[in-house]
Image 1 (cartoon, rainbow, N blue to C red):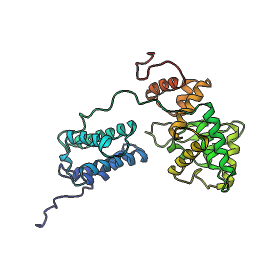
Image 2 (cartoon, rainbow, N blue to C red):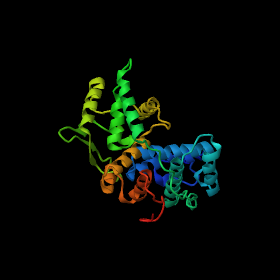
Image 3 (cartoon, rainbow, N blue to C red):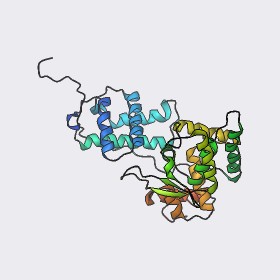
Image 4 (cartoon, rainbow, N blue to C red):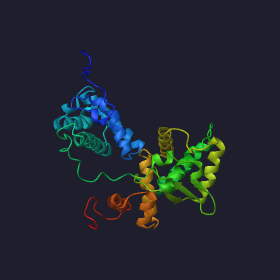
Amino acid sequence: MKQGQLPLFVVPFLEAELTPQTEFANTWALFQKRLAKEGKTEHTVNAFTSDLHLLAEYAGNHLAINGFKTSTLEDFLDWLEHGRGVPCSRKSYARRVTTLKVYFKWLADLEVLDHDPAHAILQRSGPAPLAIILNADDIFAAMLASRSFKKREEPDTRPELLFNLLLNTGIKKSEIMRLILADFERGQRPMLLIRQVSAKHEYKERRLALDADLITVLDAYLAQYAPEKQVFTCTARNLEYILEAIGVEAGIEHKLSFEMMRWTGAVRDYVGGMSPEAIREKLGLSPISWTETFLKIRKLAGENVKIGAGRGEE
């Protein structure tokens, strides 16, 4: 190589150093920085990066970014659904389309690419299938099952706390993993503080009412595990396993999950007479995303509504 000559494949450290010939994998770090700069959460950055890894698995790390065509991306999405051999849910498919659109728009906006190959890709239209929720008998059985773990040879108070906390609040997995001891407000009307992640984060800081009995369950958990700050010190996957184990113990047909608990709590609140606006605020949803969510809650509650219909149409 002659003095002063750049290597063929330069790893860029700045967006200005990106070229159409930059290898696909060598763009990821800059893309992650751009997402973080725009206020995306760590969870979103990790999810988008995971999607790019899948694209690399299909198309190759070393493909230059100008080698991606719309047909390449369409074939990739078809492979995810039919050729990879791993189930691809509607939610995962939609997010991966979003990843492609955000990533290639970033390159097109920088004028690194002269066109956006993901622009012509369409998101799937139509509503997602209705969620599966627990009925009253399921809830009672799961509650008993969660308590049964305290009576085993190796007692565990986590299942009862986890189940009751999710049933009470309907918070998401990411939110429960961020809980710290100071988020629990004791007193005659116990509350749980869900903290705001960032100024641009969709979910606002909110305080959720707790059943008084839940504090007793919390104290039993604290006596066993004695966490110093973080409430749940295990991984999110461990909590998923615990929920699944509760469902199996309770004889519930479908796998018990965070999403099932969130929908169950929302429908339970609606049937119990909580106002739609209070449920929206409790779940931390924006008014825009609430419209279809509320229709689904009503449908799950047994009302005759059309999902995906225009506002007010029934």
